[in-house]
Length: 211
Image 1 (tube, rainbow, N blue to C red):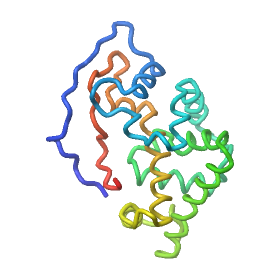
Image 2: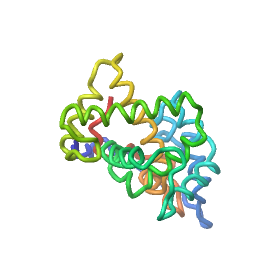
Image 3: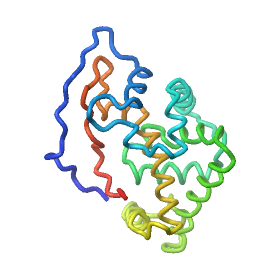
């Protein structure tokens, strides 16, 4: 689902210059603190979502992202099939997630998560894999992008009390939190490396999977 963003909703940006530059960790702390009147990480990711606790520690986020950036990444929690499924699913939810290394980053976070959150995540990941098999006879990573979009649309608009809607919201929270704490995501939210914006732009992704 790739609708064009509504340019009329663009928030004016007011740059806050810093001659010495703003370190990425400091910028992440600013995003978590809800700088200005714009859209920050605290309003993108629901406070009750388990990813929020991880994002509250910029040093831990930075460490996990450094480990996830290794070219020959070896997963610590997910198996190879689960990691690939997550990679393709994350890209469908937030385009750019693959380049931002969202899947390996989330693997790092999940490796230190509670058993309950781990089970819930695996249940959600498996639910979309099974939905793809039931509908198309192939796992999630093997179906076409248009078929993935259709399944995500169905999940995001399902009854609020349905299992698939809950699975979608859970995965979306993880993916969105991971992407917008990555360097590409933070740059979309106003960090340039040398300055930060007092008012942050909203999500620039044409994400049709809003619920």
